[in-house]
Image (cartoon, rainbow, N blue to C red; front, top):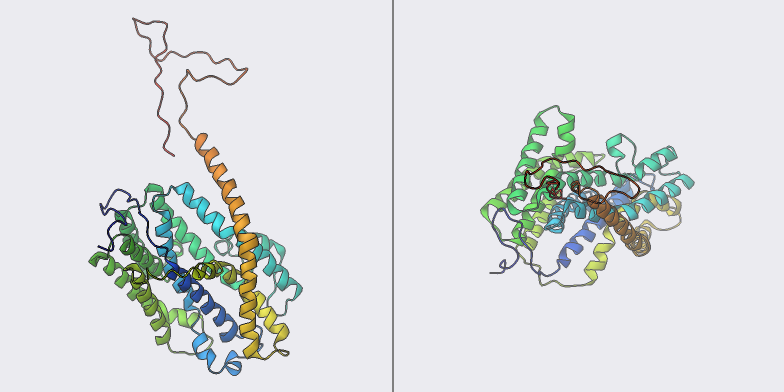
Length: 406
């Protein structure tokens, strides 16, 4: 009965979601994933330390070296959240929502990071400002241009997911279409691994698709109820994700390390999302988690190269065990400022501007009106008789066409 009232399971028509408790636990999981990535960059990499981080953090390094799995957790949550946020929305709503959410903080982060590494290029440097300008599009990876900050590659993965899921949104999000989308994307990902087709591999994203797919299935469980079909999608996605773990470990390590800890983290993430899907954490209504979750995206955008530059500047002056936690606190503070004074106000303005643009596009995309429509001032438009009735020889019989669906 706990799933009753969340939506009608008709397999075709879009269901209208009724009120449900806010999933504060998702905010907590997001900030945890972000801190995992932060610790990976500050404790597991040479970064600004100038030497092997294992010498500096002999114990913490063993755990932090798997912090990159926070990215996989992000993708898992993203599948859940995007499916949830697009239900009942139009494609235009989806585009406006995503653009106003991801771009304002990103633009500022790109410019600030570029300025820092230009002024203090000891750790990283910008090749030229054309690279910076290209990065402002968030499409630089697809164009073969270097990222201003190393974490930005994941944003291009997210963008491709948005583009793919936009196909579902454009036709109206329903239970059946989401399941079909999961199935097709899974097949495409498997196919991409056995073919030499770069375009297919680029869009199928076999290393990361299982997380988005599982996230969508988890949301369908949460909105409706768990079924064997949805658990099957999750199980298949988990097995595919685990298959790619050794490659991801190799990509994020400079020396041979065990793969089982990374696999264990992935399994735990799936278990936690499963518990969220069945409502095990609905009673957690800690409002501070919402604030913590709001810092996730900004801190992710600014922490890596700026943080490494700070580490380089202070590594000989401040003990490492003090520098790292202190830097994390500073980055969280900077993230709050970015959220409060950039992301929120600029996001609202961008959203308002995009909504006006969408409305204008819709108004001017309507089907042409009938000939009886008043012409523009100063223009004489002759009447064109398409059909003349014998009984009414002087009367136009032009039917008004229906407006185009937009």
